[in-house]
Image (cartoon, rainbow, N blue to C red; front, side, top):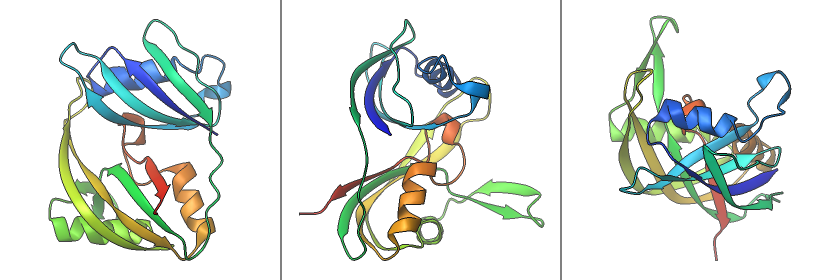
Length: 181
């Protein structure tokens, strides 16, 4: 895997999605093998993103790769990690036929505990993030930060690689971990 810092020239989530795809011109069958998260937006309409991918991204006129490095996390049971996750907490109602956003903070934290079942989690910060798109409705993402202790390394590794929740194409789902001191 690779972890990269990339600058995009658009603030619209759909256009970001398109620009990120352009970083992988030779992806077979257009299979998505990447996750991203907006780190900050400038006033000049540029967006800095953190990108995790299984193939190395290539700069183009829509997206500039500033830095890339190999990424091969070694997770161990009982170890503590700082985490950050921008996610789109949802739940299914009507026998799974309708999906709605979760707005209540306690329900959002319960959702996170279900998604990160292989870890003991302590959420220290929770911030709402509005994501705008010209192609679909605007979404309310939640940025979770905190400390987790791994109890099932294989399950957390799967969450790290595959992402968490819905709207991964629009910048949600990327779990970042850093070993806690």
